[in-house]
Length: 338
Ligand SMILES: [Zn+2]
Image (tube, rainbow, N blue to C red; front, side, top):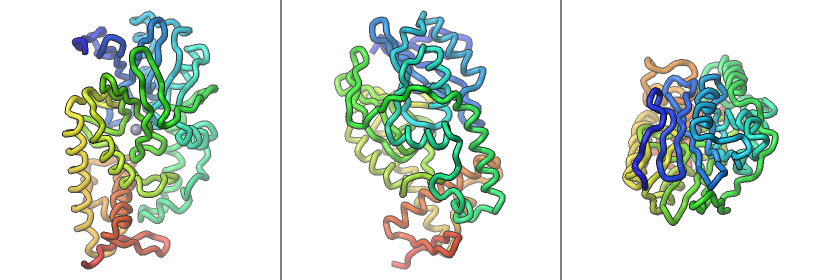
C-alpha cells in the first residue's frame, strides 16, 4: 500500500489511501456522527463511487470540491455503489447520479426493495409499524414521532435514483486491479453488503465493522427477525476472512480486523449479560433500555435507537431460549429459571 496522504488540508475531506482508492469524508447531519467515509476507486479513466452521504448542502459542496480536485468529469463516473440504504450512505445517490449523467446506482436486491418503499414512495405501512412501538413499551405518541422522523429522513435521501442495478451477494465486481466479491452481511441493515478483494485482502466494509464505535444493531419496524443473531453469525464468518485493510463507513481504517471483531463480540456479550440481569422481573424493551443506556444524555431520536437496540438484544436471548417473551399487546421479557 502507498503512504496515506491528504490532498485537502483544511477539512481533510479527501485522502488518498492506495494508488487508486480515495476516501471522501462527507459531513452528516447527525449529532453523534461527524462524517461518513465515501470512497472513489479509479480504473484508468473511469471512477466508481462507494457510498454517498446524506443530501445536505455541505455534503454536495464537499463532493463538488473532491471531484474537481481529482478532475473527474461527469462522464467518467461508471457507477455509484451503496453498501446499504441508511440516509448517510444512500442520501446523495440520486443527486450524484444526476451529476454523473445517469450512471447506474448499484444496491443489493433486498435493500432496493425496502428503499423503494421507505425512500422512493415514503410509505409507512411496511412491517408492523402500527403496533411496533406500543409493543416495546414506548408511549402512544411514538407513532406520530416515528412518521415525522421518517419524513424528515426522506428529505435527505431524495432525489431517488432513476436507474438502479442489482448488486447481488456472491457475485463479483471488478474495479481496476480489484476483483471484489460481494458478501451479504446482515445485522446492521437488511440487505447490507461489503466488497472484498481476496488478492489484496482489502475490504470496503460499510457499517458492518467499525473501528471506534460499535455498529447499531436494532430491531426496527420492518426489520427481518433476530438482527443481532444474524449480525453475530455474520461477524463469526467475517472473522475467518483474511483482511489486511478494512475501509469503514465511519472512523479510521481498520488494520486489526479480527481483534476489532472480537472487541465488538465482547461488547455484545456484555450488553446481553447486563440486559439479562434486568429481566429478573418481567420488563418491556423500553424499561430494559433505561438500565442499559444513560437516558440523561439521549435526545428523543436517540431514545428510539436505545429501545430498538435493546429489543434486538432481548429478541436474540429469546431465540437462544435464555429469556422468554410474554405478549399481551405489550411485549414483556423475563429470565427463564435454570
Ligand atoms: Zn448504517
